[in-house]
Image 1 (cartoon, rainbow, N blue to C red):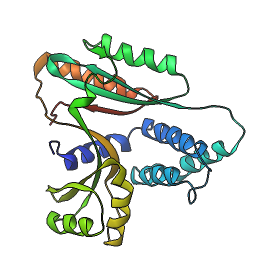
Image 2: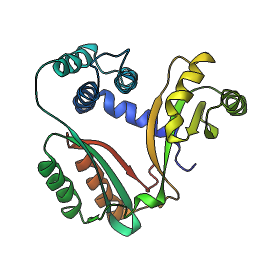
Image 3: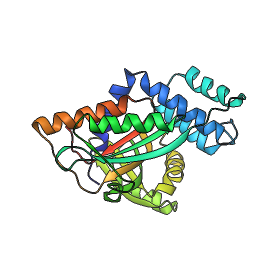
Length: 238
């Protein structure tokens, strides 16, 4: 389905492992999930899933526990999810998902990331219609066909299963991501590289020279913003 997810996961893990910002972002996401229901991992499925992803990203246990404990308190701090869409150089498209307690600050920061790096903000829906919302799961393995058949037999809405460089990549309907993870666990899969909802571009472009440099600046600024949870784009990167 386009991107080489195994390679992306390897690079992201290497970057995240040395970057404490990922811990902060997970802390916010865990807190927001805990506040959205009961601050209990067993009774709050959204919280449980976020915590599982945090563990996969090797977020320290004390950060997870602190976020949950904070949600149990009487704090009135609330977080709002928003999506921004825009354009980078030479046909590149960018989607930015945020989780913030200060919408005005976040909107200004996202707008500045585009405008100061030769990009342009678009209206809602400007580029997202050219991306597919999909569940993505990766784990070490081979024989994609057998996993595809097993998931179908377990009534999971699977879009595709591929093998990429010694990893299995499973694409599901968005609402089937959790079911697919649980089904794979029954098949003996214990460690996952990715269990995420992703916006996957229907086609990709290649940038070079100044265009690539400007595009990478936009992405770096966005990913460094503490209010930005996810950045998606249609540029093929090595």
